Image (cartoon, rainbow, N blue to C red):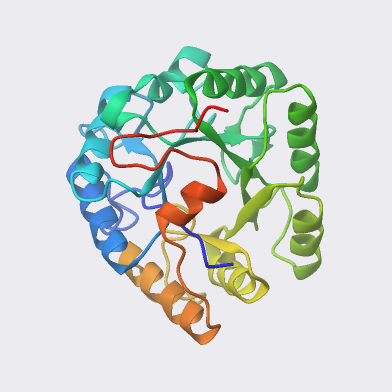
Length: 287
């Protein structure tokens, strides 16, 4: 299978004081996505920021401006919006980006499959919240981007499938290296991939110093990659050089070429995931 590149340019944690290279304004995010799409990516996983404070925002208005900017130059790129539980608790707020319609409608929305702790902050995802977000995406024709930080989270996706809140084909991000979750280890990666439900495709991501390792494992093993400043602001494990998003995308392309893997085009992944074709038609195909 060709290589899925899931590009994560911003996230919720990196700030301009940490690295000037992280895009936080609408214009900066759109510009990084433009440059990445010229090189070749398959999905963009968006986080929006308040342009006055630089803090994460759930506001559909801001997401809409980013999506509008992206679709002005690429109408096929698969667009995923974050529905994160880090600091955003109310269902109406977390689900607000899902209300965008027409040319601004996202194809996917992130769905973290359990609560978890990061280094300094928690991400609260109660069963009721997860099921409510899954139901909202199902009603809107938006595909969940299933985020699993541990083996049990994959089992919970199977539970949601039995509840008819999820249906294949599935897309998973498997995330390794968070301090309170599964670590960046070949055995853990193999176990998580093995436990994916039928009809799943996945990308592997590494948090912090694990990013390059998990990108390498994913490319060699035939999975997709999740890559960007959301997960690591450093280019090297010694932390002597701050990365740009384009540095990280270029490195993935080099590794893909060495492994003789072509970059999957958004149109091809749309077909695999039963998504609308783009070019004005977004989200999931109704069956």
